[in-house]
Length: 317
Image 1 (cartoon, rainbow, N blue to C red):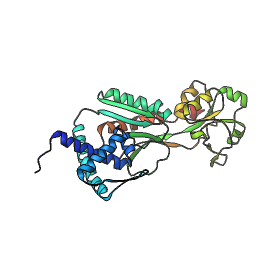
Image 2 (tube, one colour; image 1 turned 135 degrees about the vertical axis):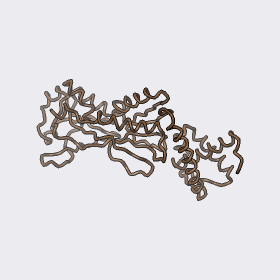
Image 3 (cartoon, helix red, strand yellow; image 1 turned 90 degrees about the vertical axis):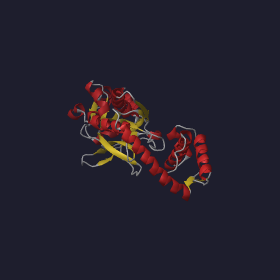
Image 4 (cartoon, helix red, strand yellow; image 1 turned 60 degrees about the vertical axis):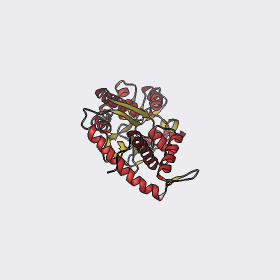
């Protein structure tokens, strides 16, 4: 049997291998740097040292692309298997502990993340003293693997991905709301077709309004002809504008309910719900899931119905 290398030599070899695997899976030095919380230069130097030690070229590099050589691809397959065995060993030890530990990095949409994800995971961190939760709030669809997140909350349709696993947390429902002051000035629409004489506050990523799709009298969903006076890329300012009487807003029921109960917003055409959107949690596919990630997923699945259940107030109006 080959003697075990001294700790400092073995550690350096493993760090180089782990960096190489991250570069392969992120597809770039920059992506691996984000995942590893290193500089791009440090990642490049680690790969250069590894190539020098192995005496082979692992990547073909140009100014715009990075691709594995044939030797690099073969080396990756073996390294990935070896690291999986290490992850399995660590997972087995971890499950023998009393609870999750370490840093859990999460990506969540702005409003839903602040309103629901943050309180739920804050309670989880409070329950487990060795767990640290870091949440990035953004409506941008992050690259979970390349940016080093343990899990992400996504709303809407999911693209197929062989690198991610997913669970559906529930369904988010929307309705239209306006302030009593707005309805006194402009009247209350009785049918979807009446909306053409009203003012909408729209969700508008990149400055472009996303059209509303609502059921007409025949029950079929179609885009509504309505004047969009304001559009924002954050649901928070949309709700604020509706509360200030600037127009009709399409809001998720979980967000609008408190203002309906306080008589600050009124459901408009409550029967004309727009498209439902599913809420998901996604995480990197792995043979062995870290205990911190498993605990977070289980907690989110357990608590989601409390946040996504249809508002009794809006439904009854």
